[in-house]
Length: 492
View 1 (tube, helix red, strand yellow):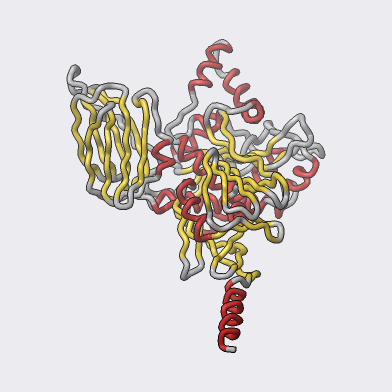
View 2 (cartoon, helix red, strand yellow):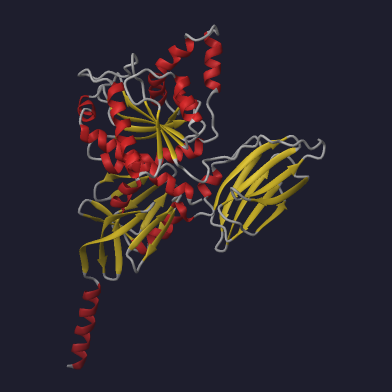
């Protein structure tokens, strides 16, 4: 009889462990804000909704065959999940979660214990799990080794590795012309450092995160004959001067630090078009110049109410403002961020949705078309202002693309895009980030983006843009993105 009772007890214990508890939530902390996502407990294992997390991060999950496989797509990697299987594919590699992916109530659920460590390795921000607080932390402020820069000098090359506090470091040369910088206690923003690859000076770049240190290695094109190093403050950085002994030393006083400074206080808001320049005209006669001015004014009101930032508007009423005036206002105001607000247009009446651009050569015809549309009035303005022929003008404009703040601008665009996705995901289409050569962004010396709020040439989008509530949502999303950008960069 005792043996039977023991068997029953074991069976009950096993059944108890296998009980699935639905309906619970866990928290996600991202740039100071707390979001809730769905979760459940299966035995002793917590599963969370990757579908919910993807929405918060501004990414998306697509179902190949509903209930069988799903893909999580980001800018740099694609993860493929197979339902009821512990195996996932990340680009071309296979990982084992030990526990299977699950499809519940239309969402993709994953075991938090085994998935997050993998996600942390591929995600640009630090991802951790706080079991006691039931909290996923996505922490872009985690890094203390933040950036890398190269500046040519008369007698060689200056390399700067940026850190947010003084750190012990070691520099050594290895075979193959590798210059290695090891930072004790360093936590390196790998994605940011790798983005600084400059083939003019480098053959390769490598970044490795160890448990107690970080190492940045650059393989130089020129032989390393002699170098000096020192730590500099404000901002904190390790400076390495690669010296060419064949030339004499000439002081260079024109070095400019990269990126935004340590405080982001002044926002330049640029409402596109104005006056005789109507911009895009909607199917029902809506004028872009009026729509975007209202969005800009709402954004300025939010900023002034909070008193976290100063705000400067390139225009605050229906008036024409030249390209030169817009850039002059931005630069002479010593702005920290530049946000140009527009509404899109297309010959394809089905085209709709919001899109955030930053300044760089266009990737595709669609981005190029958006730039041509917004540049049209400025091109006419520049063309009428001098005697240069068309070829000279084209050369000058193409050469205006400045890249000093390109990484920061792309980051600002990505952050605001995520806020748009959260705020507007059920209202219009998310068209993603893109880059193009917008003239209005060319002359401003600060991180800058151009917001295409929606398509006036699409019936549904035009209706949205004519709603005060939608324009308010747009302004609030931009403002939340600006605050997140400030929180990220001022912590570095």
